[in-house]
Amino acid sequence: MMKKARCLRELAEEHGLHGLYFQHIALCRRRAWLHLMGATHAVHHPRVQRGLALHQTERRPGEAPKGLGIAPDAIDFQRRVVIERKGTSGAREAVSRQALFYAAFMMGATGERWRAEVQVYGSRQSMSYDVTETVLDSLLQDARESRDLMNDPPPTARRIPLCEACSCKPLCWDEE
Ligand code: SF4
Image 1 (cartoon, helix red, strand yellow):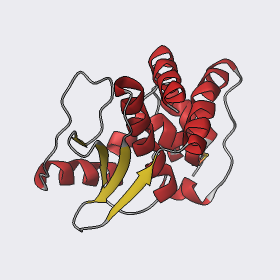
Image 2 (spheres, protein in one colour; image 1 turned 30 degrees about the horizontal axis):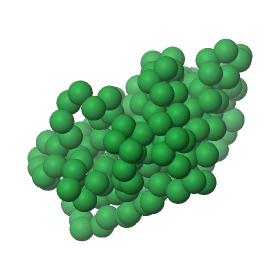
Image 3 (tube, helix red, strand yellow; image 1 turned 60 degrees about the vertical axis):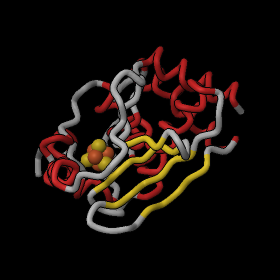
Image 4 (cartoon, protein in one colour; image 1 turned 180 degrees about the vertical axis):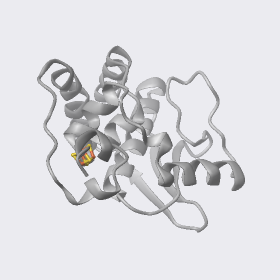
Protein backbone atom coordinates (compact mmCIF):
# COMPACT_ATOMS: atom_id res chain seq x y z
CA MET A 1 0.00 0.00 0.00
CA MET A 2 2.81 2.45 0.88
CA LYS A 3 4.47 1.64 -2.43
CA LYS A 4 1.30 2.70 -4.29
CA ALA A 5 1.04 5.86 -2.19
CA ARG A 6 4.66 6.75 -3.04
CA CYS A 7 4.01 6.05 -6.70
CA LEU A 8 0.94 8.33 -6.63
CA ARG A 9 2.94 11.10 -5.00
CA GLU A 10 5.68 10.81 -7.62
CA LEU A 11 3.17 10.80 -10.48
CA ALA A 12 1.40 13.84 -9.05
CA GLU A 13 4.68 15.72 -8.77
CA GLU A 14 5.78 14.65 -12.24
CA HIS A 15 2.52 15.75 -13.85
CA GLY A 16 1.92 18.76 -11.61
CA LEU A 17 -1.38 17.38 -10.32
CA HIS A 18 -3.21 19.08 -7.46
CA GLY A 19 -6.07 17.84 -5.29
CA LEU A 20 -8.67 19.61 -7.38
CA TYR A 21 -7.75 17.55 -10.43
CA PHE A 22 -8.95 14.41 -8.60
CA GLN A 23 -12.23 16.13 -7.78
CA HIS A 24 -12.74 17.32 -11.35
CA ILE A 25 -11.95 13.98 -13.00
CA ALA A 26 -14.53 12.30 -10.76
CA LEU A 27 -17.14 14.74 -12.06
CA CYS A 28 -16.39 15.32 -15.73
CA ARG A 29 -13.42 14.52 -18.04
CA ARG A 30 -13.76 17.81 -19.86
CA ARG A 31 -13.71 19.74 -16.62
CA ALA A 32 -10.52 17.89 -15.61
CA TRP A 33 -8.98 18.76 -18.97
CA LEU A 34 -9.95 22.44 -18.60
CA HIS A 35 -8.40 22.39 -15.14
CA LEU A 36 -5.13 20.94 -16.48
CA MET A 37 -5.12 23.62 -19.17
CA GLY A 38 -5.53 26.29 -16.49
CA ALA A 39 -8.78 27.36 -18.09
CA THR A 40 -11.21 26.74 -15.23
CA HIS A 41 -12.70 29.83 -13.73
CA ALA A 42 -13.86 28.29 -10.50
CA VAL A 43 -12.56 31.18 -8.44
CA HIS A 44 -15.13 33.47 -10.09
CA HIS A 45 -18.01 31.09 -9.40
CA PRO A 46 -20.37 32.26 -6.63
CA ARG A 47 -20.23 28.89 -4.87
CA VAL A 48 -16.43 28.91 -4.79
CA GLN A 49 -16.39 32.56 -3.69
CA ARG A 50 -18.74 31.61 -0.85
CA GLY A 51 -16.38 28.82 0.20
CA LEU A 52 -13.40 31.19 0.17
CA ALA A 53 -15.32 33.73 2.25
CA LEU A 54 -16.31 31.04 4.76
CA HIS A 55 -12.71 29.91 4.93
CA GLN A 56 -11.74 33.44 5.98
CA THR A 57 -14.61 34.14 8.35
CA GLU A 58 -15.15 30.74 9.96
CA ARG A 59 -11.60 30.21 11.13
CA ARG A 60 -10.97 26.66 12.23
CA PRO A 61 -7.77 25.19 13.65
CA GLY A 62 -5.13 23.16 11.84
CA GLU A 63 -4.12 25.35 8.93
CA ALA A 64 -1.77 23.33 6.70
CA PRO A 65 1.81 24.60 6.64
CA LYS A 66 3.31 25.64 3.33
CA GLY A 67 5.94 23.52 1.59
CA LEU A 68 4.22 20.13 1.87
CA GLY A 69 3.62 19.90 -1.87
CA ILE A 70 -0.15 19.86 -1.30
CA ALA A 71 -2.57 22.51 -0.09
CA PRO A 72 -5.45 21.00 1.90
CA ASP A 73 -7.49 23.28 4.13
CA ALA A 74 -6.06 21.76 7.30
CA ILE A 75 -3.90 19.00 8.67
CA ASP A 76 -4.06 17.28 12.04
CA PHE A 77 -0.57 15.83 12.40
CA GLN A 78 -1.40 14.14 15.72
CA ARG A 79 -4.34 12.16 14.37
CA ARG A 80 -2.74 11.95 10.89
CA VAL A 81 -5.83 13.35 9.19
CA VAL A 82 -5.96 15.64 6.17
CA ILE A 83 -8.99 17.93 6.22
CA GLU A 84 -10.82 19.54 3.32
CA ARG A 85 -13.57 22.07 4.07
CA LYS A 86 -16.46 22.97 1.82
CA GLY A 87 -19.32 25.46 1.83
CA THR A 88 -21.92 22.76 1.13
CA SER A 89 -22.17 18.99 1.47
CA GLY A 90 -22.79 18.49 -2.28
CA ALA A 91 -20.77 16.30 -4.67
CA ARG A 92 -19.59 14.16 -1.75
CA GLU A 93 -17.97 11.45 -3.82
CA ALA A 94 -15.93 13.93 -5.90
CA VAL A 95 -14.94 16.04 -2.88
CA SER A 96 -13.84 12.90 -1.04
CA ARG A 97 -11.48 12.14 -3.95
CA GLN A 98 -9.67 15.44 -3.41
CA ALA A 99 -9.28 14.78 0.32
CA LEU A 100 -8.26 11.16 -0.26
CA PHE A 101 -5.57 12.28 -2.69
CA TYR A 102 -4.12 14.56 0.00
CA ALA A 103 -4.19 11.71 2.55
CA ALA A 104 -2.54 9.29 0.08
CA PHE A 105 0.08 11.94 -0.75
CA MET A 106 0.92 12.24 2.96
CA MET A 107 1.16 8.44 3.19
CA GLY A 108 3.63 8.50 0.30
CA ALA A 109 5.64 11.21 2.02
CA THR A 110 5.69 9.78 5.55
CA GLY A 111 5.26 6.02 5.13
CA GLU A 112 2.43 6.11 7.71
CA ARG A 113 -1.33 5.64 7.46
CA TRP A 114 -3.35 8.84 6.98
CA ARG A 115 -7.10 9.42 6.71
CA ALA A 116 -9.14 12.04 4.91
CA GLU A 117 -11.90 14.15 6.42
CA VAL A 118 -14.36 16.50 4.73
CA GLN A 119 -15.97 19.15 6.93
CA VAL A 120 -18.88 21.41 6.00
CA TYR A 121 -18.73 25.07 7.02
CA GLY A 122 -21.59 26.29 9.18
CA SER A 123 -22.23 22.84 10.60
CA ARG A 124 -20.67 20.05 12.61
CA GLN A 125 -20.93 17.75 9.62
CA SER A 126 -17.80 15.77 9.01
CA MET A 127 -17.24 12.77 6.74
CA SER A 128 -14.26 10.52 7.26
CA TYR A 129 -12.61 8.37 4.56
CA ASP A 130 -9.95 5.67 4.65
CA VAL A 131 -7.23 5.29 2.05
CA THR A 132 -7.72 1.69 0.90
CA GLU A 133 -6.00 -0.33 -1.82
CA THR A 134 -9.03 0.27 -4.04
CA VAL A 135 -8.86 4.00 -3.45
CA LEU A 136 -5.14 4.06 -4.23
CA ASP A 137 -5.67 2.05 -7.43
CA SER A 138 -8.33 4.43 -8.68
CA LEU A 139 -6.32 7.54 -7.74
CA LEU A 140 -3.34 6.08 -9.60
CA GLN A 141 -5.56 5.42 -12.61
CA ASP A 142 -6.81 9.02 -12.53
CA ALA A 143 -3.24 10.31 -12.21
CA ARG A 144 -2.14 8.26 -15.24
CA GLU A 145 -5.15 9.44 -17.20
CA SER A 146 -3.95 13.02 -16.89
CA ARG A 147 -1.26 12.24 -19.48
CA ASP A 148 -3.89 11.03 -21.99
CA LEU A 149 -6.01 14.08 -21.26
CA MET A 150 -3.14 16.37 -22.18
CA ASN A 151 -2.10 14.40 -25.29
CA ASP A 152 -5.47 13.40 -26.74
CA PRO A 153 -7.90 15.77 -28.49
CA PRO A 154 -9.90 17.85 -25.97
CA PRO A 155 -12.88 15.94 -24.53
CA THR A 156 -16.12 17.21 -26.02
CA ALA A 157 -18.72 18.75 -23.76
CA ARG A 158 -21.45 16.31 -22.81
CA ARG A 159 -24.57 17.50 -21.10
CA ILE A 160 -24.79 16.16 -17.53
CA PRO A 161 -26.80 17.44 -14.54
CA LEU A 162 -23.70 19.17 -13.15
CA CYS A 163 -23.40 21.48 -16.20
CA GLU A 164 -26.01 23.87 -14.87
CA ALA A 165 -23.96 24.68 -11.77
CA CYS A 166 -20.50 24.17 -13.29
CA SER A 167 -18.09 27.11 -13.31
CA CYS A 168 -16.92 26.00 -16.79
CA LYS A 169 -20.39 26.33 -18.31
CA PRO A 170 -19.49 29.42 -20.40
CA LEU A 171 -16.57 27.47 -21.92
CA CYS A 172 -18.76 24.50 -22.87
CA TRP A 173 -22.14 25.99 -23.69
CA ASP A 174 -21.36 29.52 -24.77
CA GLU A 175 -24.47 29.74 -26.91
CA GLU A 176 -26.62 29.79 -23.74
S1 SF4 B 1 -20.18 22.56 -18.16
FE1 SF4 B 1 -20.66 20.35 -18.16
S2 SF4 B 1 -19.44 19.48 -19.82
FE2 SF4 B 1 -18.57 21.48 -19.33
S3 SF4 B 1 -16.95 21.07 -17.87
FE3 SF4 B 1 -18.77 21.57 -16.70
S4 SF4 B 1 -19.74 19.58 -16.26
FE4 SF4 B 1 -18.26 19.25 -17.91
